[in-house]
Image 1 (cartoon, rainbow, N blue to C red):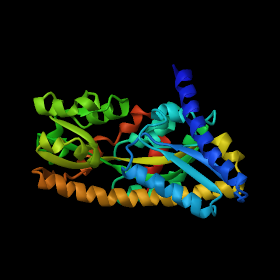
Image 2 (tube, rainbow, N blue to C red):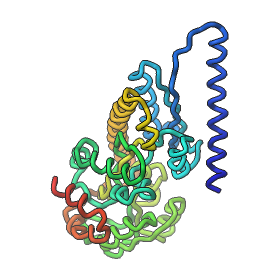
Image 3 (cartoon, rainbow, N blue to C red):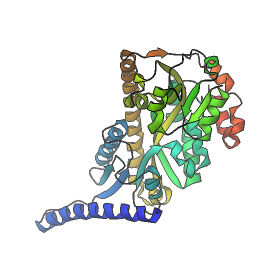
Length: 335
């Protein structure tokens, strides 16, 4: 099945490339000088027009600008080239050259990538921005993940903090006792909510709305914009700003491919990825603020609990994931 998917992806891209080449051939036949352009395929599973796609369009624009038109990035959003796993696995054979995804999706290739979902790794958004998006620790994490997985990883950006929507009021960590909360069926998330005293319930994302509506679960946790986009304000009374995970999107290249590029092209990609990441982070900041206000207008009460109690419950959490203990210690030491 994996081979069939990869072959289908090759066929789609071959058709696209042939179409582009035909246009160049016409220009050459007409006697026009056509500059040599290196083209790159960037795959993205999120929706066309969303904040990630907007940042990828900006990335493509920056690459074109910084290379004086000699490098072109073709962005394929909306999962048109396959699932995130299909496209990441397509990097090594060169079916795609760039993928934008969350750092955590690379856990299948790098155990260190699971740090992306580590709870309260950072004690505030400002701490996250300083250390992960703009600091040496963030650079170290990206380098380790790249080395473990055979990637070059760059251009970190904020995906948005994970929060709760709930039908039970949560003003402190003690209020979580016995709360049935839908969580992704991933060990990091399940253990997080168990440590906090809640009762995590693994449930497919397509079932969350009905689960909240019918009382199968009392709460769910996701980024603000996902929660808004799925209209959880219709079935939850409270928006609880726990900000328990700050997750990061990155640009991902196969290391062999990236290192084979001329130094000038590598530099263009690094600069464009950094600037596009900053563009995305600012965009998410602005959208989150507006979205929270909109959810409040729709009748949700916004709660901002003291997170120190949450952090205290999780102070020994690294023993569950010993392979992350050293990195977690480094980050916590910068608080």
